[in-house]
Image (cartoon, rainbow, N blue to C red; front, top):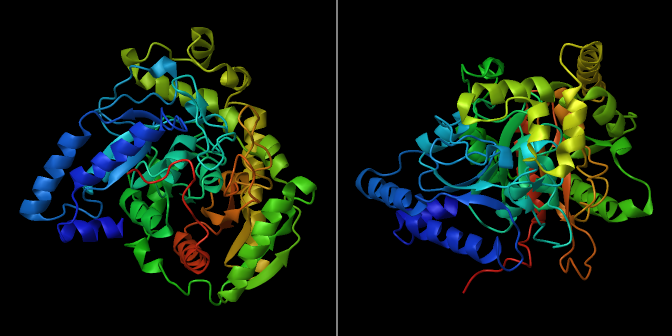
Length: 482
């Protein structure tokens, strides 16, 4: 992004020129070529808006820190000038009355909303398949999923369909596609970024955050979208807890002197885990070479247990999603989970989860029990970090590689961040061994988790790690256009 702005200032490019190039790439690779199916809709007024941004730039200079920067927005984030489908045929024609909070923040910063990204329908799982557009394909291995639920953003950013992207995360859904698509994903502390105008899965655990190709770009986006929004009361907690800018934490020596706990219970020990473990060893060695002190942590945290017995995502889905659907009034024909199931306008792959959620509620002993378990988990992690004097915990986001198309995502560790609400960052940690379908290998992601409101510390470590390793590389399936 910084290079784009520098080229704009020198008169070497313009918002229109880069927007045209991104649209060319989407046209070449999203429904043709590898057919990634990452983009639901390209803004039909993108070039017109680009021209206006260029006019303002010539006459007045940049209006904000993202002036002229094209954004790929997950399609559960509302846009008043484009339909917002949440990946579902049931919302195929839903045009919001106004922008989501973060959409407004982007526009105020001078950004251009270029396109809406495909996603796992209503964000309810991790393979990124929807009734509106079908399965998103991983550009590094066209036989695999891109992670999810923000897989359209992850695949689109990997394929260079926009300058920056946005995902949402209830259990794994920013960090999973970042890990699977060699991107950087930031899941902020709950309350740092407003959820107003975003179709919810679980307001107890939902957040939005950047998915970008570099740490610096992700931080520039976070600076723009973070902050208090009266329409989302949870963001009141951000007041006094967020710095003026996270850019100050982009330190090349950000690993130096940090005590980082290696959470071994989140690693696998079977043959199918070998590629991930090998990448993690290289990554941990790089952290140590960068001046970090690595501490082996044997705390027996079981993320499968957390996902099935502690996370409240399915227990809140009915109440939170129905509250959103009812708020749409006559712009949405379906106002209940049962109506969505009966409509025939949702993907068959989410029907069972929807049926399960239809029988659950926040007004239940099970929900209250899980809420208490989440509180206990927060204290457990805080005490662990206090006892060992840790700045952060690290582990692979996914114990094994992203699964082939048609399979369910397995052995992901993102629930530790989502169930606690603590911030975490996924960064590229290398690739698996090459195969016929993945000539460069399949991307592997490392996750760094910290205390609430410690985004700055995490950013400093992620940036230093990225600068030292340079693991990211573009996918073979979407090369530069002639």
